[in-house]
Length: 529
Image 1 (tube, rainbow, N blue to C red):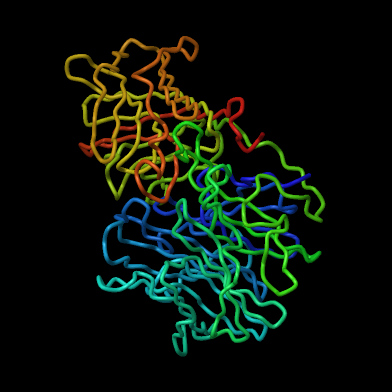
Image 2 (cartoon, rainbow, N blue to C red):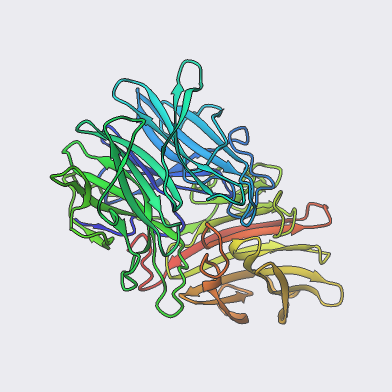
């Protein structure tokens, strides 16, 4: 059974991988989505299952007011001394601003799903930090330093400082261990055969992305750079189906095999936009005779398929395509925007078998939205829901949303019009500009039921609705789904499909959904395929 990439399709960037005994875990960036840091588990490196999130309390992560693509950047998970250690950030400033206002936190737990500790704040010097556990028991934080001065390079170098477990704080000198003209992100330290190795993400996280290495006999340097161009990159190879490859971490199996988890993105043929965002892939790597890391298959290009690892194959049940909200808690595949889910705005018990949302702020809000969503994980997907909603004011809306960020989303919503009563139509925000497709609106006061559908076929998005779940009619024009990507409107997140409700008058109007069904269509490259 070879490993097929991506192993985590859809919006799962900046992977951090670690092994604890026979168990393998991968965590990813979540930015403004809550809870933070999803964790996938595997026994064989081939098959992965989302089992939960690691940052689940507001005391660990306060995202209210953070900009689009702020929040949790590049968490790093490790296992040492019988405990899991997680380093993560909360970035509070947006693009085009000189400052980042970064908070770097450390939490620990004996078990992967916790309980995780309250955070220890380390420093605010730069993003993408990681924690290295040396053989002598000492621990070191390594991260880049952000230089905001207008006459300097924004990359101020990689810094290293010791972490004192007993004092729960950083101690000793801050050492700048590596500096280059270009930006370096995602530094990770490893030790092998008397060498300290630095794994480096270079070239930004877009089309020029890649991974390089440096090494030293001393943890504080000096570090020599790998003479090769890169360990991994797809730059200058536009035909490779895995583009933007970079930002990775290493894991070693008990049999001595080494694997590199990294991000990559798959452009769509006609638009060259990466609708499924940055995804997680895995490559087998080896150590060369002169002690440098190399892809096992040779070269530097990521592969869609790699050889079978020396691990027994694991069988997992298929991922459910339907959520009928019959359990007291939401499946971990759901996320909310910036705030934890609680009974004040979402309930699975008020009406058993239904999801109840209480409308709150607008889809442009950076604070208290009533929106939950799942990642888009295939190029061809159909999502359907059934809802009950009785708005009596235009301030009240609810429905099915295809979402990238506050400044880019498509929304099939039910609302109220003073002259026509209950209506259904498409509204959108494109590059921050709000619009209503008036020609798409349909009066639905007489409908016995409200069924909504979104169908994505690569670049095409079609909304439909039905009064009975059988006779469907298209609502609005064919929309450009490829706009739900960083290649249209720059950011770090990915396309999501979800349910939401707004009540801008503050009256707390509720909507109830009986299901959400997301089906991957043929040739969609969804997880179950």
